[in-house]
Length: 297
Image 1 (tube, rainbow, N blue to C red):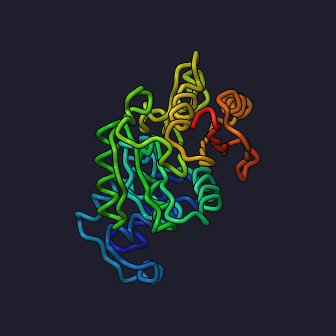
Image 2: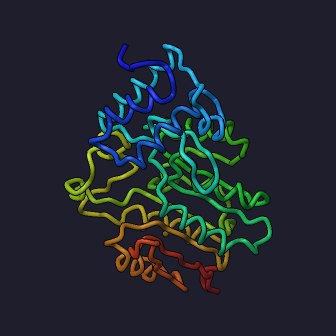
Image 3: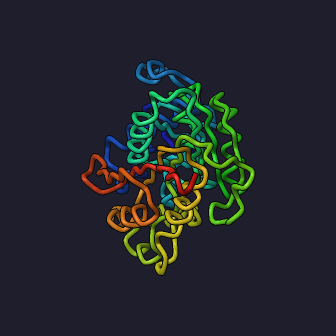
């Protein structure tokens, strides 16, 4: 057998010996803990005092498969099949991007800005796994939350996450670049739009890690070098039609395009535009407000 025994200590030794060149000790300890807790359906304390735990042959083969996938540079979140985002445990796999910590900061900003609204109507565009929409609904239960996503694969994942979390959203399959994609919605009807759209220029692939390039969906990551603001422009233009007076628009952005996004929003007539840094000190999110003029009304 590929492990020395079927006890927890044997599994830990095997896991660490195979992956110590790729991950730190703390990363390895966390990964094996999460894998075993999920596989055996046990509690943290069961794991902590797990000297008497024994693994079946099927369990050991599962651990070996996990090791193989990690050695092939598959992201751990995909291997585990779950990720916690803003306190909500979600299913995750190659059908959608892995939610990032900076996106939790964007959710924080949205909640702080809309928390006093009465039953706000909020749309999450380019929703992916639905992480932003589920996070918002988990905190603002009375809010009317819409998740908009293009690919059928990601939409299927959102549906699965709705069942998995017990959180219900209003879900639509829409191409945000389609001029008529939102025609079924009423003008001036949303309090807030938020989006983490594709924004990485193709040229940036050179600087990205193999596990991202080989496993995460490129359609959710990359835009043409010639027009890196395409999603911001298209979403913002549509937001002017569908946001209420003084409605809010939030974007997660490429750290190198903050100035350009602010200028774009200003040129489209948005006001009170704020560019905000993440906890790493990088320009990562923008908030803007839509004001309906007498001419527009």
